[in-house]
Amino acid sequence: MSTSAAMTTTVTPEQVVEKYITDSKNHPLTLQKFVAEKRDFIIDNLILGEDYKTRWSSIFFKIAKSNNISVEKSKPNWDPISLEYVDRLFGKKKTPLKRSTPTTTTSTSTSTARPLSNATSTSTSSNSAKLSEEDRIKFNKMFTETLNPKNFWRLSTGTVVELKMKELAMNCTHEHPCLSMIFDPADCVWKNYFTEEELVEIEEHNKPVIANLSTEMSSYLKNYKNLRTLTELWEENDKHHFHRINEPDMYWAHTSVSRAIDVLLYNIHEKYQTESDLMKRIWVMIDSCFDAGNISAISGESVSKATTTRVNFDRSLAGLNSMSRQKIGTKTDILFTTKFFEFGTCEAGKNTDINNTKTLYESGMKIPKTLKDMLYVLANQYPSHVHQLKTCGFVISGLNMLPLLMDCPKGYVARVNRPPSFFHYPTCASDFYKSITNILSVIYDAKMVMNDVNELLNDSNESPTYGSRHLTILPPSFIPLEKTQSSKKRKFNNIDSVEEAIS
Image 1: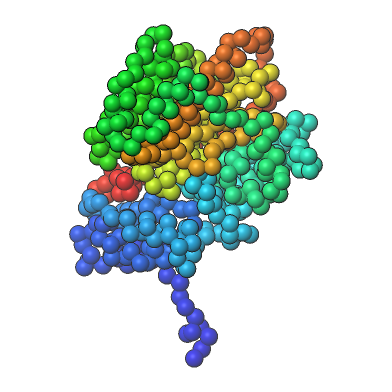
Image 2 (image 1 turned 180 degrees about the horizontal axis):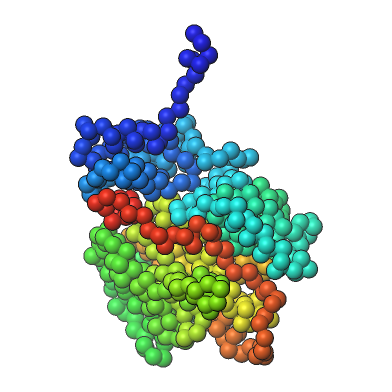
């Protein structure tokens, strides 16, 4: 047998989709039927870190359109593929996930609160833009022309944090937080650039801590410690009353406990259907914590002013070119803000599985970039306080909640601080005390952090000056070229968008 005859021909996803779509036996054409019939092939071609739903939906509709073949609306069942993906991702199956490009390591994140990051040369996740050569040139120009090496963060070993971040950034094929000078010590990719001792030094330097609840609040919550039935919780709750105006923090803690008991009594934690249900009925304690005070919690897809500033960074008056249209910033589920400044954000998803793509992307990319945008605005108005500023975020994944805190401990590094795991909403009487205490502690601590930063700014002696500031305090978050062109929406036959197919 000849060598060429013995060679195995690799069939690409595009070839399989093309053959399926052009075969009239598969008409009328639906994505649902394709996913069901080609499930094994899709599973065998899963790629580490990819948003496989969007990838396969995009291929399917693009090829259908190029062949002028209509696609009927349908609801694909992605669950079997999702389960297989997670099993392979965490090593429960012998068959590993493919990588989008060769890498120098096979390390993946297993901590429940760690963001998913690929190895050194790639960084792909849901909605992560593919980088072009122009993107690398743009980042390198920002790094070399606007950052002062004298201000870099030099570790005790002599390693310079910013230079290692640049090294990773220039190796990335897809957008990664390092391009925005964001450092998340929980991201496993950094193990390829720093020693364990160096990572500990970065994480521990002026590390923020979650403050203890007040003595009064702790004493109140301990009343629920040894109660084992919902009736006992309910009866204990009825014994306490706090003044709305004179005791706002205690009133918030008490009403939060009352609502949590109601959630369990009426099984709302098992019956909610939408993100709106989740935030309105279960996680309402986040909004209500800010009822009293100078910082407001605005819910319902509010647009961040800080991210709007970032995406319009290069917008100017018409001259050689016409004035570009104003772009809209990131929409958030909750925005923590005063009249002029933003101090935090919250993103929610109804899926309790913390390894779902939406949660991984929001905790690893979307929220950190939004917090960096807020930190950037504050730092540029109050440069002398850059290393004292903090912004806070919450990631909600069903009944799980992860707090994030961003600061700039040294140099130009925007550091993400996170606990080792998610906190859980109580699901029964026996875990009520521990769960509700943890949740209220991190929410209340975030409020105190935001209040402290707001008071710091109000008490600042920063003097106003004329002239443009040419000295970079913090660089803005990075915007890949691919995302600046994303306003041109792709359209497919008989379907509104790919999102409709993957939701």
